[in-house]
Length: 347
Image 1 (tube, helix red, strand yellow):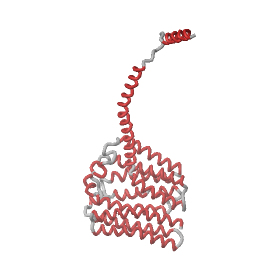
Image 2 (tube, rainbow, N blue to C red):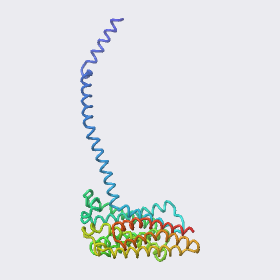
Image 3 (cartoon, rainbow, N blue to C red):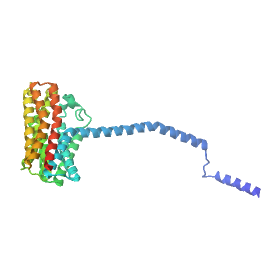
Image 4 (cartoon, helix red, strand yellow):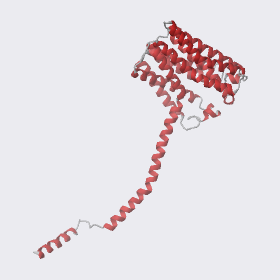
């Protein structure tokens, strides 16, 4: 029996080694596996580096696209849009409606900011505060910026039109055209660009107001427009003074470069502060109720008088210190006034 078994095993081994059957060579396989591991180990750092570079490039692109929209201005516009929408609606606005309105308005505003930077991409290289922007620093191509800006503006107008009505979309289009094709080229030609820019910057007030039931014939909407338009004078005159040398070097015609003593800028700051107070108080008095009107008017005065005082100090002593104090003061005034006049609607 044992001999038969041995014979069978022998024939089995012989069959395994016959034609067409590979004989396992373990040392050779180990050498091949080791070689592959070494190649993989050498390729992994390069692959990881490529992935890291791609991730960094994407982050830089997204950051540059956001910077192209002038996000600080967009945020300010969105804050005012919330207030004007609630004032027009006479109360709270549903979250879905508000998100849709902010999306459309923000896209139009961001598109206008991008178009402004495309227009000024060459002159921006002459000012340190703008030379780091995506276009003058050559981090982004003009074609990319143009495609992004055009797409965002078109989509924003479509949202305002289809989500609300033709009126807010029309106001949005007027804002874009005024800001891009009138205000932007005027910056190198006349100091009146500030006035045109203030109008363009205040028009979004009417986007939120007309989107939620307000009319262009309503005095309330234009008073809200007046608050934002007037506020821009003390705010931007302070900026124009602080960066007057850079503006002059770049070739911009600002009040502080055309009239370098700063007297004109100071007068406009005082006038703008007074106009904000007037528009805010009138808005408080429009709704019925004497006590609420008085309380809200006092609140408006408490919020705006510090900016008026800062404007007067700047007029008396036109220095970087007083201009910076005026700028800081102005940053608190707009949200405070809008908060008061919005609360007045509920009172």
